[in-house]
Image (cartoon, rainbow, N blue to C red; front, side):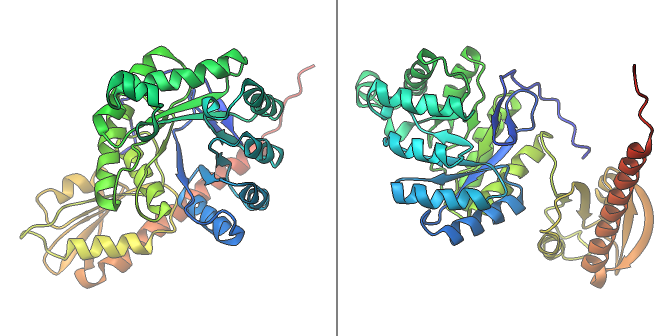
Length: 379
């Protein structure tokens, strides 16, 4: 409830994706990817803004053609968050988006041709302080590695990654992060574990082609959760066949469950049973919908009866314990007042927003007070 985490994170070197630090002691960054036609600038910008409003720290945009690169220029000018350009094979597109101010290149140096082309991309990235993301995917392993290992394996993923790493290292390029993705949870986890012990570059976590919203969220929570609990991972993307906004929400839910990041409401609710004194499921769903705009962290517990309710309520900022016709509202672990069960959602929303407003006012007072403290000049 208090956001503590007992996880000791792997030490990694830090890179900058625009103004977002990735690695080191920086918070684990949450990413998603647009699924609009990149050449539709308005639609893509609208989706990026929706993702940013939901909490995305970084957004990836596919740039498959030079026409898309020209659209990317306009998109970048309007984006509220750093953008990663997803590029495959054509080094000229990488050079163009670098010129247009891309914050990170997702391009595998081993797939863009001659040494001269690789050098051109690396030189452009160096000149503009643009990091590169190496992305290895089990579905697109090199043919000789498939033949060597017979099928995608953790070792094959790692060997593929090293091929691209060696190219960048040969050009004295250090600002890169790596992803090793497969749709198989155990293959993905094993590959990351191997690489995490051997290099100190930031790792981008994900389970690729994870599936529909429900199954993909579960698979991602299991796979990413295993790695994050071991301290592995510096940025995450939850891949879902769903609205990209849902990827960001699930990403934060995974991090919140591990105490690694706190954003928005941490809502604790009972699964409901015959002991419930009000409709818990309906109350929780409506409350979540009403508070989707809340970005600040607050712990809230909604429990349908007095068996577990008081204990949960004492650990959160706002708590509710079900009672006959009226339920008890708790504030900061103490009983506050009873609320008619028909008015629970209205009262909970009002109390949560009041508490957040008080928190903001207190923060502003502290900030204002700090600004007024005279600075002693040292001669």
